[in-house]
Amino acid sequence: MSGAFGYVGRRVLVAVPLLLVVSLVSFALTELLPDPSIARLGQHATRENVAAFRARKGLDDPFLARWGRFVRDATTLEFGEDLVRDDGTTVGAGIRSRFPATFELALAAMLLAVVLGLVAGALGAVFPRRLADAVAQVFALVGASVPVFWLGFMASLLFAVKLEWLPHPDWSLRVIAPDAGPGGYATRFLFLESIARLDLGAVGRALAHLALPAMVLSTIPLAVVTRMTRATMLEELGRDYVRTARAKGAPETRVVTRHALRNALIPIVTVTGLQTGALLGGAVLTETVFAWPGLGRYVAEAVRSGNGPVVVAGVFTFAATFVVVNLLVDIAYVLVDPRLRRGGAT
Amino acid sequence: MRGARAWRRLRRDPLFWIGGTLVFAVVLMAALAAPLSSHAPDRRVTLEGERAPVAPNDRYPLGTDENGYDVWSRLLFGARASLFTGLCAVALALGVGVPLGAVAGWRGGFADGLLMRATDVMLAFPSILLAIAIAAAAGQGSVWTLVLAVGVVQVPLFMRQVRASVMTARHEDWVTACRATGLSASRTLLRHVLPNCLAPILVLATLGVGSAILSAAGLSWLGLGPPATEPEWGRMLEEGAKYMREKEQWILVPPGLAIAATVLGFNLLGDALRAALDPRVTR
Image (cartoon, rainbow over all chains, first blue to last red; front, side, top):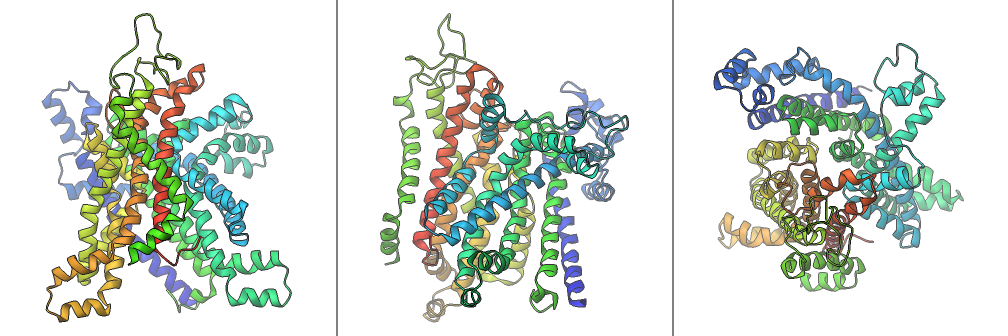
């Protein structure tokens, strides 16, 4: 057991300096992005006003001092004052209020991609070069080539405007849980909290509103998950233990799902973890198409309005989430794979 | 010859021909944009009394957008913008990534560790997000903003690929033989090792053009690319977005299809190249 804890400890220790450097690179963007005092004071602000504002907010301090403040404020998830709004609110408050919507959208999209990708990839490996295999591969490739923002338009046109099967996504408490009571929800995790409250009506509405954006966003990791599953499954199905299982008379479905798929899972999980990055990036575009109240749209709007500190904090939050997800994936192996638990392999 | 064998495999691959046709069609669109277009792509061409957006008719094969710009002409010139962005971005990534990756793989040690940690950090950022930040930082939107933003985020991919190939080659007997004949290290690397690493770089570059075009369209759609008057596919979609619930929904179709077909073409070509160049890949 000590091997497992040692391994987890080492992974966490490697992640901390990486996060620090990521914060440095994110914060260095401040130097390149437009001056937030312009966005606050307007294009026609006098030079004196800008200088006074910069001095008051500490924008002229040495870079390392400002970075130090950024790291300190990041650990409390406050990220300092929102200089453009300049009303005492912090950037972190804006980030925290939008993170849940992105989290639930990304989670739904990833689950959809993994389920579809595993099924399509496994089918492709069991029946290689057959029609189902070809269809799955072509779908995955086309999905990866279509821009998500265009796919968003087209999917809304088809499912929300023409067929009217799904609503135009509107991720607000008013729509998802109109009768949530006076206090509303305790968190902004509308879907997860609906489940926790066992409010089936709200869960249904949340699913209906999640469906379109999650479907669109899932096309980004889908191709990679499908291919990885197919390739590893093909390899595993050719191994000796599969032949042994078949020889002792195990039914083919059991051989595929219990023996081969379980062994194929580790590389698939790795690739899935790495795809989180592309998924989070795609969230910026998907959220903008569907007016989804998440972090991606917040960052895109901050880019347009010249709110540098929000862009920096948003970029850092996305990157930190990605680093943490991959850390969790690494830790998950130790729990799944007994070979790693003994601390033998790395 | 490995090249001849790869070509034989490539020739039999239907996906190569589909991808090649798509890419060829886009190249034709870009090359023949001027003679094929019906109007100027970057100004109002509607006549007095015509209410933009005009539906497709004899005068405007794909209609006009709300500003009275001809969609077909913009689509043709947009192919130029997309190909230019994709190719320049990959050239940038190659120009920076290949030398750095080669040094890391050849020298090893401290330089290697430092460069690889740098790629770790860059790859910790979702690439579109990093590109958005770079484009926002670069200020005035133009095609070059897109090239820079999309090219920089691809650099670590090339660095890693080249480093891996060079490291594998470094310990092979023929490299030792080169050195034993008195060839200098840099000459061995440039004339013998790097040419042997070309295959994976070619595959990565082909796929890279596709993903660069896709990302650039996304940035341009967010308004970070060239100004609205310039013909660019992502920007055309942004202009058309407001018609989603109107009867002019057709405005949204041509640019999206064009982006998808171009990216699919490069992806298919890249996949076919990988299958042909790497005998381990089975389909």
